[in-house]
Image 1: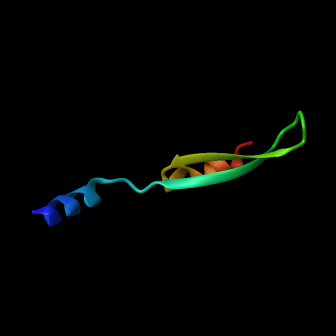
Image 2: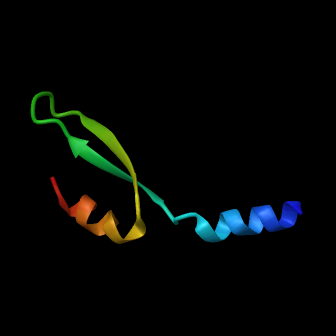
Length: 50
């Protein structure tokens, strides 16, 4: 019975991707990392934004 429960959870879950972008602060000039979790289809659009 446990195998059926695990299998049904895997088919209903969505695939997500964690994207990390390095952004330069205009005030201090230091680099910071911005992280976001999103569907894989939205990663390229998110990375191209400033």
